[in-house]
Image 1: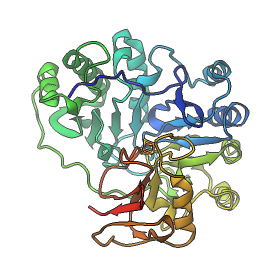
Image 2 (image 1 turned 90 degrees about the vertical axis):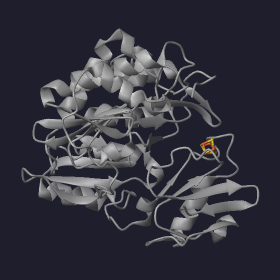
Image 3 (image 1 turned 180 degrees about the horizontal axis):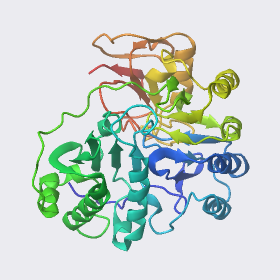
Image 4 (image 1 turned 45 degrees about the vertical axis):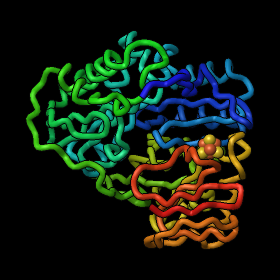
Length: 396
Ligand code: SF4
């Protein structure tokens, strides 16, 4: 598959003209935000945007209705959130959020940071399409389920499976080798893709792409292929760290974090991780402060209950952010949650069209304003898609 339109992924220096105004996407490699960075994002959202941070399905952050792009770039640069003007849109790196704190074979956050530095150090890698996704999984298999283009997953304390196009290649590398192998794989993808904006955006779009990159890496497979994609628990609620401290996993309804809530989180003065499941992990807390965080932030809308229906649902931007949307999807979905029409359990097989106020669905579900279904999570998900006659509920 080749593209006839250029890669239009937004960044900070190239805003997307959404229906409700300019939209900026800020890459957060590995999802890690220092407190002062979270504060800078909260300030920018309030002063220059619509007053909220949007969390994306790749663990990045978006600001909507940006009023002053130059001021935004200056502020984010000062906060260390725009360390490269040439490579900003290729820094799509997700890492296991709990790595190094709760379980997992290895602490991979350092590898994610080294990968980011390696990407930025190679001028040619600025040509990677903004859609290419790197995954760095500490062995629990959480971010590998995102089926990135290039990734690693720990299989022992110092052994990593190399993943390409969402599957295990059988190649095994040490921690010392892992970053350079991922960078070489990215270069191999560029070689296959050719130059210009009309090439493939993702490795899986190239016939035999993963196999050809493996050939270029010139290494012999050494492991039985891993089965990827098993279900994993979302990191929500109280999570005891291996070192005696506490992490708190917090769901963010529809991924929209008000600037005021972000300010409270920044004031906790601990690293916060943005997850690719539109949630946050607040780390390195003593028990007393952790209890205070829950007491203060739960009433502000953050979700610490793993059974919350908000954790079953996601939605595209819908109106007013997207001109293609048939309706305000998020408002309809919020009404469904608040009126107990998002149920637990397994959905009945169905393909029906019903008015918004009658949509009642069990289990994981993604609501969309049109057939493109932007932001749909991977895995078994019921589609709820706006049509001219109501919402089509489609259980696969
Ligand atoms: S799914 Fe359709 S309506 Fe929703 S954001 Fe994408 S293009 Fe817009």
